[in-house]
Amino acid sequence: MFVRTLMNGTSFDALAHEMDRLFDRLTSWQQDMAAPVFAPSQAYPALNVWEDESKIHVEAEVPGLSIDQVDISATAEELTIRGAHRFEIPEDGTALRRERPVGEFSRTISLPTPVNVDSVEATLRDGVLMISLPKAEPYQTRRIEVKALPAS
Image 1 (spheres, helix red, strand yellow):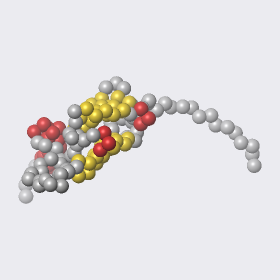
Image 2: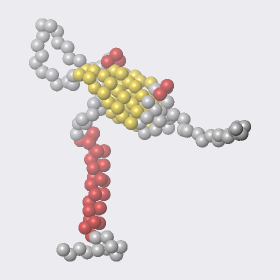
Image 3: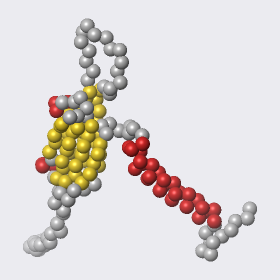
Image 4: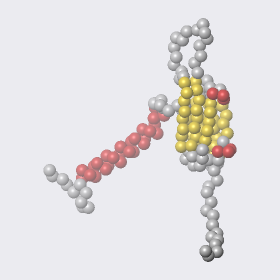
């Protein structure tokens, strides 16, 4: 088999393979970014997440849920939203079609920066859960004094 080599000894096949790999990574990233726009997401609830100087903001679509059907928990690095959709039919009724989601859900996302969990706020309005997570103060480097102990 005839293989051409570059000046540094790398084969053209290896270079082509590396270029294909890099191109695949680039296009998969673009597809991931475009997925929520062009195709429904498999994750539920659907989220919008953004940040400003002091907070991370999360909007979650939870149509039909009341505040007692939603549970939110946070650590400095993660946010979890849990809830349950119910489908109740009166005793004398018969279900003819069920297209809305039913059952429990849980969604956990990693946060881009640590947050102050003691100051997280959440509101629910018109089926949209809005969560505001204040960013934690940056870690400060502190000089530690070393104390001498008596010799033993």
